[in-house]
Length: 276
Length: 313
Image (cartoon, rainbow over all chains, first blue to last red; front, side, top):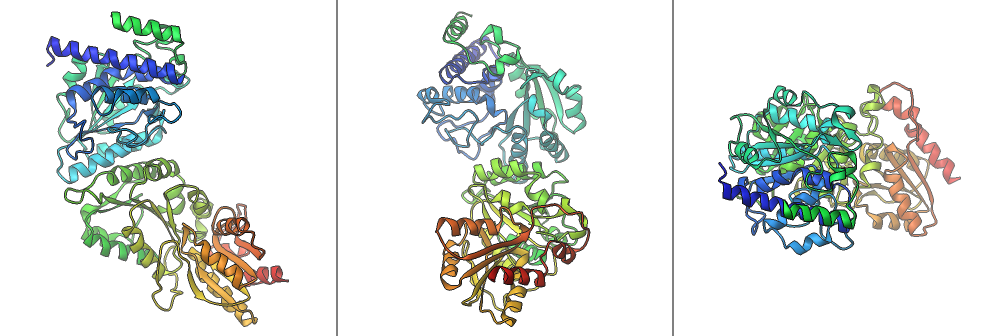
């Protein structure tokens, strides 16, 4: 599926995105570095390998849509969009800063490529399902991808949307859960256990696959076979690590959601990324 | 009002293929004809109002081929509290923040669902929705205004809330008035007292006006069918033409028409006798039909007339 050259190129892109995320976190003294780092490979694979997109024509009606529901991790989306050429990299420097163009949680069309305003959890899947429904009704070719956090699967509205998409067999809809197992104030298994997670989606009429969300071969492999089943919406449960490739002391810890890196930590993390 | 709404919706939707009707599992004996004629432009979303609102936003973001500029017009429908409160955050973020062409239709304004209890009463909707930027709020007062408001709503591009009564409200207008968004309608002119009525209380305002006239007062009666944007001009004009002004609404006295008018009066340093007449700030344990619930809350015609006369003393 992926030759070694392509794999290397994707890995390189992921490193650049991670660097950007660390820099944005540092400059804005911003939270949510951990969840941004955990979905880097997913976003890079989607924008560089999977989705049918038009960076210079972001409103093209034929484009695949990405509804980034876990919008608190917008840094990851902005970094990927900038790398893919939707807007100039200089804009990243204004992330969360006075007069900048990139809010901490996305605003629709704040920059080209950002499809929806989001930030309150449990909204994205419904909007994605609405788009997918009319896409099917009008026999359109586009697909709708949405990235959810595990924490937002606590929201009742997410399950309303899961029920809806399953009922209507929206096989042009693909949900990817960034299952990094950590939410706002604890591990998901301790706060509100989602398990058996895959079985829940399955019983709501979705086709489910679980993958390592940091392994490009697995991500691209599965996302090249969409829909997972004709007549059903697809969900990819991506097992990930919160804070991967960032500041080691925050990795897989609640603090990765809140602590921005210090100057020194950022420098070391970036150095390590460049080396590794 | 429901009948006027659904007939206008159906007639418009037959011509405008971008209209999509979503309901939160309600509409028995209301939507059957619509469903029969336009089955593909109707969806029962189940009892899932948050998802209904998000899906409507998603649909509104998608244009139709050949009609891309206009996009879809999603109309969502439920009883007032379920159409506006359960899904308030979706209305705020998905619809208003993104300024999408979604129409929120709440049925059962005030005590329309009287005996069902407070869970089904629509008493705070205007108060909460009035705070949302980009949202236009229509509160038609009779079936004629409902038809006009529904047409205006479907013609206007942007988020709209349409507040409906239930069924069987009489027409107050004798002829078809001119309906402009954000412009109150002067039904009668007078020089003593101004009565501004809205939504299900246009009828009450009319009844109160008749009673005050019998008592020898010259009454100016206005239907305020749009609460947002509010017609400040007609309010200020009324304070020059009459010395007292009363707002009538089947809504909490907090946050609705009365509050909106009070904001205009105070910011313009107007010296006028003024009272908000509406549902007091309390839940009651009373059980009864719409008129009974109104009476319990001091909103019978005679009670309102007395309140006004008392204030005029």
